[in-house]
Image (cartoon, rainbow, N blue to C red; front, side, top):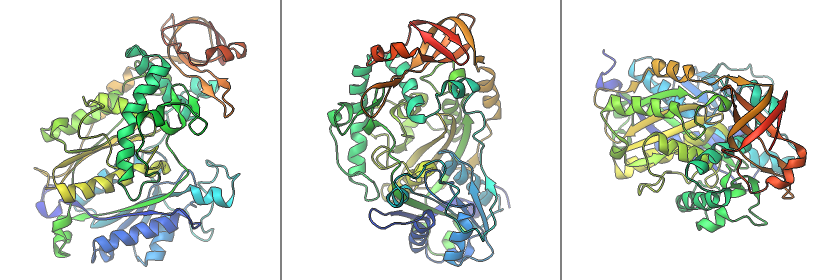
Length: 494
């Protein structure tokens, strides 16, 4: 049988989601609920599952064998169990891999699940450490399962680490400073623009029963700082940040068209058409902080292989951890941010919720539900790291012409890597700021003001403001300014 044998066409046939607002639950509780919903959605297929994959939890206890625990609860015998590496790109990466294996006859059916139980963790222990929690809470009697997926190696250089520019909530605003400068907007003006960008997301979330926040907001609710919507890092307010304090889970059941037909489920099949993956270099090494050559390369490969353009797509979900991810994701595929189709099918991570690495699983579920009802094509963009690792997918309500395609973008990746700028962890001299932010404490005071700057010799540097400057930087953008940097890690003065 050839790889394009129609009977081996991969399909998404079982969909499930879970949400909990009151009881204390675990990651496996949520994946079990979502998996049982997917089994109810696709009756007759649970006995055909060869593999269970859990998207790695990062904000709540999970243990080292969540798929094994889940398989035991679901009484799935003889299945291979695995967990992914960290990264919001992994849900789409897992679907692309599974679809390719089904098309090649290497896999009959697979269950892909993911969840975060962060609300429950914090309710039980308000002092719990988000990042230290992810490998706790599982059964010690279960052997750790294999870990699969792209590594997060290389998402930061030593320069970002040395300067302390390591929190996504601080790095993504740096990207937005470059976008604001390119549009000749001050931080306050850009903040108003971001309110306009995100308000439509809240309307989608308001109609999504699995969204954490279901209030439709006007732009000013998002962009205007207030007691309940403090400034976090210029130009962002709290409501522009991904919201991780959720209990949400999802499940996807993928199989072949042949098995779906045997189960009498062809009427609900959604078809993965193609998937592609590329990686951007670390933030300080990027030639343009407001751009993503990796998204552009992966998307170009997708659309070219399928003889499509973004105008042929009916539903879209751009990764939405922070506004700059949405803006850059749209720019890379030639999509206007006010496109009438909308930029999300879930409501976006600040409003739907940001369940760690697993958000894009919910996006795929939501997209598949839309395609079942309204037909057509859909596009999902998943992102891990600091707008670093990108996995993109195209889905359709009809089988893909020529079969599923997992695209090889190694040549494009080599070109992206070759264009990385040199980065230094120590510097003395003058530099031009290409991106920066002002980070605020909970009391509204300026806590830090990191910048990424280009030295006169072409090297990039990440520098923090001289402490005496901090109070005078509130509300300012230094993009385009000349600064004097000195030290290791470097500190800058105006």
